[in-house]
Amino acid sequence: MDTLEIIVVAAIFVCLLLSFFFSGSETALTAASTARMAALESAGDKRAALANRLMDKPERFIGAILLGNNLANIAASSLATGILLIWFGEVGIAYATLVMTAIIVIFSEVLPKTIAINHPERMSLLVARPIAAVVAFLGPVVLGIEAIVRWVLRMVGFKLEATENVLTGQEELRGAVEVLHREGGVVREERDMFGGLLDLKDLQVSDVMVHRTKIVAIDADSAPEQIVREVLAAPYTRLPLWRGGPENIVGVIHAKDLLRELEAVAGDASKIDIASIALTPWFVPDSTSLSDQLKAFLRRKTHFALVVDEYGEVMGLVTLEDILEEIVGEIADEHDVAVSGVRPHIDGSATVDGAVPIRDLNRVMDWELPADEATTVAGLVIHEAQLIPEAGQIFTFHGFRFQVLRKSRNRITLIRVTPLQRQEALPGRAA
Image (tube, rainbow, N blue to C red; front, side, top):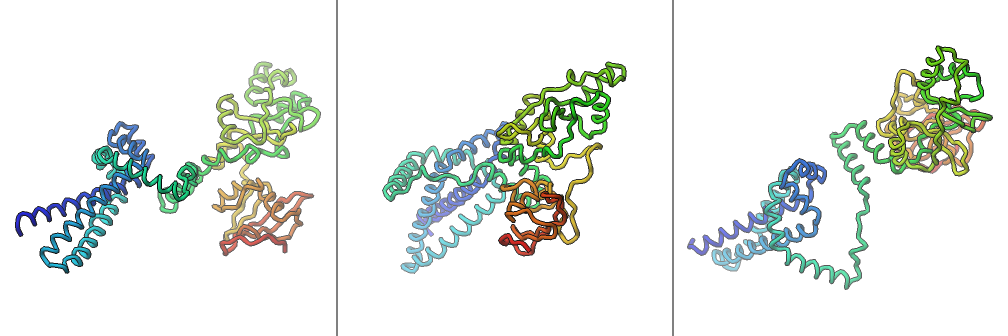
């Protein structure tokens, strides 16, 4: 082997190394976690900052990498063909095709990409500076190629401006959390907390409020002694005051304010002026998103609001705890009633109170019943059945069987929900 042949072989080896570098760099930079790289940049890592700038314009660095990679592969193949023609004659073309294909696929494509996909952040930090230099060097060429590509696409009627990511940032984050949950990196409780946090913008206060039929309220015209007894007997610290009718809320009384006033009058409840310690009620529209309501609670430094519909009628009440429970799940204290309304059975079914919210049932049983058309389980049955069912009727929809166990007037009070073996939801029917 003379000097020229040695130089050619060395050049082939260098081209394959460059191809290895470009292939691994492309995979590392595209697979690296944006959140992880942003955290490294915030911690002062200059290489992470450089990598993030590259990833901000992916078409630029990918174009430069593809250009460099193709140049390296074509150069290596051409040089190999030439040297093998010298060594083996015309059959050297076949040898070059087989050998270079195997080498490029295994050592310049699969191997570097496998390494990069398993250590994307570490590889991104290693290649950030050299890739930035390559992008700067090949930038003008890449811009020219982009211009040609855009011109060709416009000629065939393809509008680049119309292309957009079909997934929102929230959906991408939700999908990433779901993948991590399936892989075991995120437990179910943590997945539910992430999902609850992302759902705050999509849910309204009417989805989580305590319905007016369940509100514990006090008649403002009652004797002060009676009001004190009712406040002490209630499991809540804030109670609405009504006058003339439960729907006419005129104030909110806080147990702590009542106790302070009781101490001020030396324990004589008859001397308490309830009107003077009652707080002004805060009314919010039922269409307010949970995200906006949470911000409003923090801004006003209060934890209690009454929910009204478009006609100003009281529909229920919402508290800061109700919103937080959408994120972290049920928050119980020593005064909470221990009945959740969901009683699971060994066979995978559950007996559910009709007033249980669908989201709470999904969270407890790890189901995926739709909560778009109804808030409660009873509401879902009525919506799908298109009637108010009688006790004993059975309905099948969304992959579950719903058996109405108990009914009070026009309200479904108890339902047995059983998941079916088949994955596809069946059309609703009454049995």
